[in-house]
Length: 245
Image 1: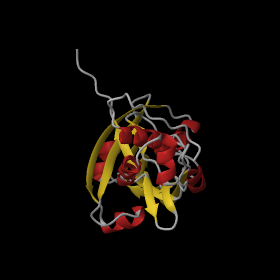
Image 2: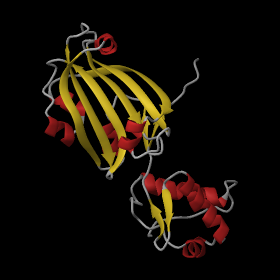
Image 3: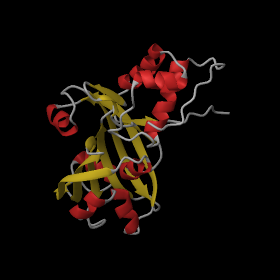
């Protein structure tokens, strides 16, 4: 491991935490990629002039976060970094690419269906009218990340399955001349059903992040309704909170 690691002994921040933060940053920024071996605790301790328990505590904190795993006969290995998605109008595909996560998509449903009352209300179309339904499994580094269900007004754009697997839905919209302007979004959590657990490689009943979003173009027209579920071990939303004057 050829990382530029250093600790500040004059800092009030505990040494183990300084080390764990630097290792976590290296994982998030791609300096330590999934599958990389972290190295021997003894060697790392000697290199930084730290005690072995301090190094072990730093590594254990990242094991607890799911970023590292200890494998018998192999050593400590990087598993993945968690994608931290800002609350802005962006697509998961673009966020994964920006985080160096090598996104991939499997399209499971791509069809036209009659709009239910809920979908019709979200898209502002008559109940029972034709809408396009797409369900996709989004992966990063070959591991399931999210299950995405989207409905779009009928005839909005050509949703080619091969294209949906090669790029993001918002990119396809922009290429079709649709200008995305704003969205209304809600975030929650619930337990995984048996089917969801199987899709996302989680245990039945495991906690999942949920997100519902209605997206509007620059004319105020609803162009997409998404109902998505995410693995919280791999994904989180980031908020910036401001004090009102």
